[in-house]
Length: 74
Length: 162
Image (cartoon, rainbow over all chains, first blue to last red; front, side, top):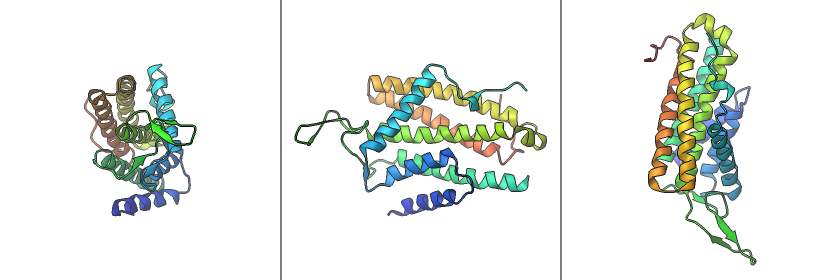
């Protein structure tokens, strides 16, 4: 593994030890795994990311704003 | 309160480090990684004998941009969600936090719309100029991601410009 990959692996290990593993952490793990898996990003990994980004893109184009980005009145 | 704040600090610092790692990879040419033919970023036909014939050039650039943008976007969403879910508590100690995070929300939504339009244009016409628009959206999203993640643990940061 490259030094860079070792650093990233260390960070993900630290994240995994946190008591509450959020969805973001799980997604991040998938990305890191995909980027450093034996030099080949599998068709399944590609399809998963592409479908996820397609869904996000289409929802945004339809004007669907996620609740996190809604500005509540003061 | 300090325990809560340091828990957020540690996790968000790790997220920022990961984001920097993925960003570095996104803009570093000649990555050793390859796209397996037959995936969405390396379309191919599977022949009757099981062999695979690529139908288009693999698009590693889009793969990395998609991964990088989604990571930056999800990180901003997480920061916004944390603020919303803990607003009463955080607001008592950091009264300006909601207003500052609302600036992040407005900017993020605009950038996301720009990204979606750029990505749709690229998928329709995969040329370098359309890829540049996605890269610009990514750079902006990462900028606001840094702002959002800095706001939460440092509520005494100077207010953002209007």
